[in-house]
Image (cartoon, rainbow, N blue to C red; front, side, top):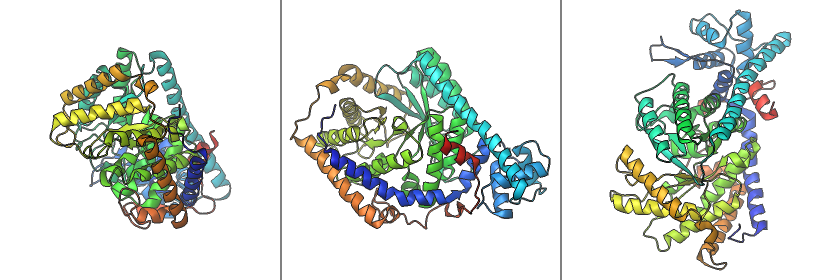
Length: 522
């Protein structure tokens, strides 16, 4: 039920402006590829494993192939044609065998023409189609298991992070969290992984403030959550991070291992990891096509803006980013029911009427995006060593989520910003959530802000400021707005940032069967 009486013309204007602001960036994304997109393509085609003999440590075979193809003939035509042409020319059975031969210096890659091109493209399409079929089977399996075990009985879903650095320890925490009421388990990534231009191989036990995102770690955790799902009688969802320099690859690995949610924001890597803007927009478009095919809910990262900018003054930038994320998602084929837009409870609690302001911002997001599974993020910026005050603040956060109909509630920790939370801290945090849901789970039906009251007026103000900002972005260009520090006060020029050397302009005749199959829905 609409409580804010938003002007539909203003809402339509906001979406129209967001589309205009995004259009030039979408055009750039379509005109370019990246080393990560090409690696993701080969992963769909079946390449696995790593070169354990390299002097610098294990190097994924997919990196070996991509780097060598780029050196020999460039990536302007994509990796599929030269890779599958070489596969046939050298009479090799798999892409992994091709990678081994490449590392041994036995392969010279070229872009085929004529009949050779036609045969290479056909072979690439068949191999990639098999990978996409695996993604489709995993989506169907998720649906089957949800039907068998059921979804959580209530909304919002309770989302809890584990972050030990050791996948085996993560399994222990994740299963216990599910038994204590968590509906979604997020395995936070090791510090710095977003800046690695490769995906580590195998199970890992040495992450820093998190656990490495690898295909084997995905498999281990999904199996563990399937086991506990059967035990608790509801399907427990698994989340990881499709962001950073390997965004497309990790999206593919998530689809191949049946993850259910992925952190996947259109600008987070630009703003908070200083990754090149063009690289990020190209990679996010491909990754969202994969997520759409896999039925994976994405979570965007607007909450991060409010850790560097003031949560009241910058509220409208969150709304603008949500509108841009919505457009980028729709353009890539991601429907509303998979679009977990982010926002956060980050207003300084010392601000007068801070809770009412939080309700206004949360309701605005809920009513602008009624069909999106919104992800409501807990207070972090203003948490201190006073765990009692933190526990109370998290209780208010949980109440705001219930009152405003949020979809996914990330459990707040009273030890946030003090220590990496212990298992006991998580247990107390879940108890806080359970109390609020049990005591006030249906309170939203009784909550009616006054039509001309503080909450409604504030929501209208934020939406109006968002429209004004979108008008400026349309005039100046989204890339310039990012460079000027519009979002999160982070200034990131379009020609700067990490990974810029991994961006490649497509040539006439560029071929990527993965993109073609994903866009066609075939």
